[in-house]
Amino acid sequence: MARVSGRRRPRAGLPSPAVFPLRLPAGAYPSAVVLQVLTQFGYVAIAGLLTLGGLGFPIPEELVQLTAGYLARRGPLSLVPAFLAAYTGIVTGDALFFHLAQRQGCRLLDQRAVARVLTPRRREALERHFRRHAFLTIVVARHLSGFRLAVYALAANHGVRARTFVLADAFSALLSVPLVVTLGYLFAARLEEVKRRMHDVELLVLAVAVVSAAVVVLVKWLRGRRGVVTRSASPAPPP
Image 1 (tube, rainbow, N blue to C red):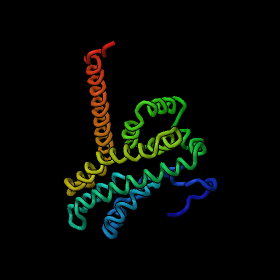
Image 2 (cartoon, helix red, strand yellow):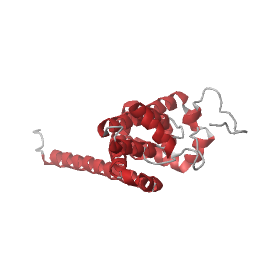
Image 3 (spheres, rainbow, N blue to C red):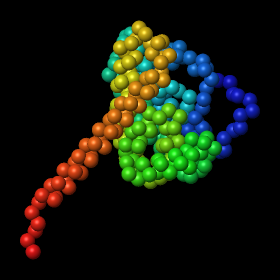
Image 4 (cartoon, helix red, strand yellow):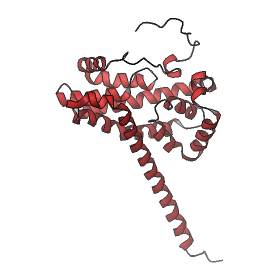
């Protein structure tokens, strides 16, 4: 890809794609390229592209997953290994970004691109959510296009443990990867139409994540209520 003239080079020591997610103009990353790369390199390409996407490179996750499902339907790939490759790539890329964000510390949050997304009000709200429901906040944030990397950077520098992050991200990806790859598999004959409605696909994935998070919150609340009732019903110890 030709280098855009006049673009200021990032400061040394900062992982450029991860800190500054690139935005390609429409048509600069045609689906034919994804199809060709995945056809030639198979599962390695699926995992590799999605790992780079997690680090902030301009690689559309849903497009790669839809194309993987398409190729599984058409024959070059198999469905279950395509699932596993996509899942591995997404979780690996997100975990690597979280690790990089921890190493960069507040310098990353001070970057203009991050500060533009994390306004003071949003940052305060997210920090409050991290204190109360860090796991569920990560689950939903994974599917907030345009906000994900900034939210992950804040989580990495707001005391969210790496184990909590990886588990939440892995759970969230487990909700979305089978859905998106299966859409590519089931609608292989109408893949171009599905690609044109990519925004609808993203909204569907986000809705699944939100509903799943709500179910988890409800289950935890019911368990807490049951524990309170059990303790209150227990006979008081003798004096």
